[in-house]
Every structure is written in C-alpha cells, then in structure tokens.
Image 1 (spheres, rainbow, N blue to C red):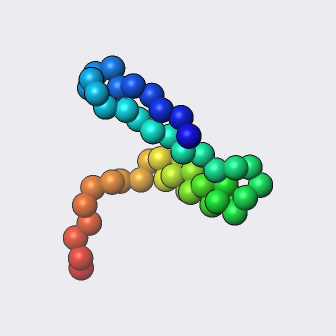
Image 2: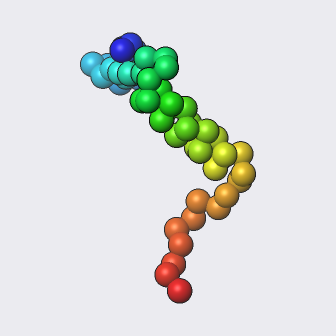
Image 3: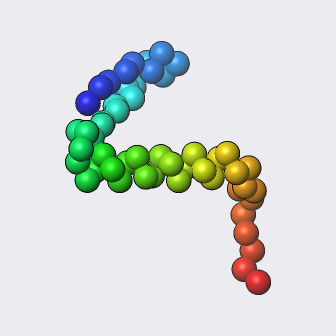
Length: 52
C-alpha cells in the first residue's frame, strides 16, 4: 500500500493498493488493466446507449 497527499485538496490522500506478484489477484488486476487499455485504445464511443 502506498499513500500520496493530494496537493490540490488539502487533507485528502490517494491510497494505492497492489497485489503480490504471482497471485490470482495480480493476474485478475493485469487482465482488468488490459481490458481497460483495449477499450481506450479502440476509441469506442462512451456516450449513453438507448435501448432499442
């Protein structure tokens, strides 16, 4: 765990947790990160969708 002070918001901190390498949690976080990277690099439209 790491903590960082938020300079633009006195009294607030950003807390970052990380998974130990080689664990199922680390694998799951890596997968989640790759899915997010794929979505952002694919330039998908993030506008709300209407049901049809």
